[in-house]
Length: 112
Length: 113
Image (cartoon, rainbow over all chains, first blue to last red; front, side):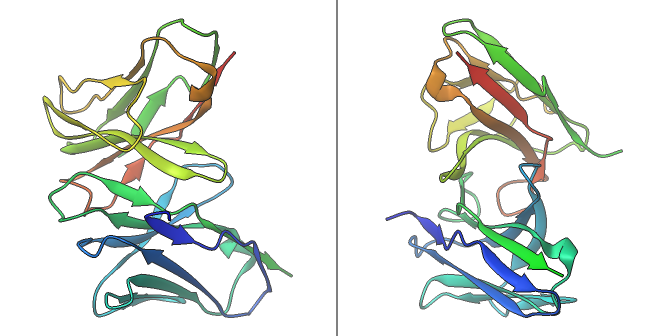
């Protein structure tokens, strides 16, 4: 079993749709959680950090469920420009350890 | 402009010929790391450095070496490259560690024949 698992997709959705991705992690000691966006084999860029209380940034909402060990990303009113691969990232262990674990990514294609 | 730079961006080499991929950041970041990205496997951490002269293995360190003699530079060394090291490599840095936003370089596409 992978330490961080994501459904690779692709998710094909029409413009304006709401789409949700989940990511599960296996290390219950993990402290830090993130969603990164990667366009077409370019460098990943931080989309948002995921906090215990959940957080929202415009059309994007991220949530953390520690009991079930998963994080989620919700995108509302999808735009063509949202087409990308979304990477779930978890810091293994405490925030003082140096290891980051990436999921293999979920590909989103938003169609006109 | 705040950035992470990598060189070269593209490299084709032959088995066994030592090579170095450079990584440099101008943000005075303490934490730097190297990843490789392969289809179906995602990004996997090779090595990381919490600060100058402090380096540690990630999940796939075999066949790689790193050094951190200065804060801004974190070169990746392949002493004897093999075809299974053909991959897309990313360097990243962050202010203090993995709990902070990672800034990635543009990537280095390496092919070993």
